[in-house]
Amino acid sequence: SSACQGHGVAINLVELTEGTFYQSYVLDHPYYKLRHFHDFSHHIQAITMITLLSRGRKGACVRTLGGSSTFCDSEVYLNYNPYHDERDGNMDLRSTEFPFEFLYPVGIISNHRGLAPLDTSKPFQSLPLAPDMTTEQFSTYGPYYTEHVKGYNSGEDIQSLAGAGWLPFVSGLRDKSDPLKNYTGYYINNCLNSGDGAIFRHFTNGTERLYMMDKTELVSIFASKQYISDNYVSLEEYTSNVHAFGCRSQYTDQWMKDNRIKSYFSACLTLTSMYQGGTLSL
Image (tube, rainbow, N blue to C red):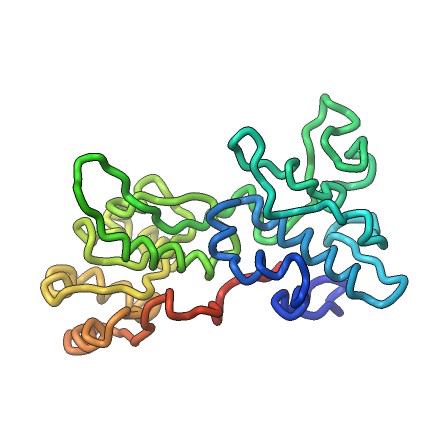
């Protein structure tokens, strides 16, 4: 909505891509955020522009925000396939026939598919995208792998993967036992029963700790009565200064309220099949 000198409108990508080749990518965006990481934002941008072209009125054109080039023919991009993204076992935008011309100013790309710059002595300077993918970090935690256990409860990880639906993209996966060590980006945490629970222990300065709390979402959590008692001070600080906890179970919600800690019942993230409130915008 910030495009077109402030006269743009928000785009519902589910509605825009309905019945198209790309709708599965949009509907399954938590999965593709975890699969493509930073490249997810590029794919969403390309899907949006191509779909606007193919579904727009005759003569309609699109332009990347911040760019000077206009694109008016969706037929040129028929070979683009965001699902086909492995080259020699690695994720690579080039293997998808990605329309690189959407990302770079005129004169930067030397051929139609944009595989090389005209001046090889200069690095690619892509057009600005929001959020800034070169500085902002958005993370959740990933599965814990070990060869020394016979069984493993993956329920916590499934909650965490579902939480990616609320991030614009995923820049990395954090170790759930110590997720904020050497990290100051945005973080979604869905479990308070693992580790010692003190996820903000690295931030001894009160101002820095509150800053990091403000960038951390504690949602769909499950905690025991003992955990709540043992960590009352940090739990109360977070809920008093940031926002209430979203609790996975009604029991956890009630235990929080019994201890005068702000909370609400949010249920499991995996039950929110359409990801209402999820972040999927340009």
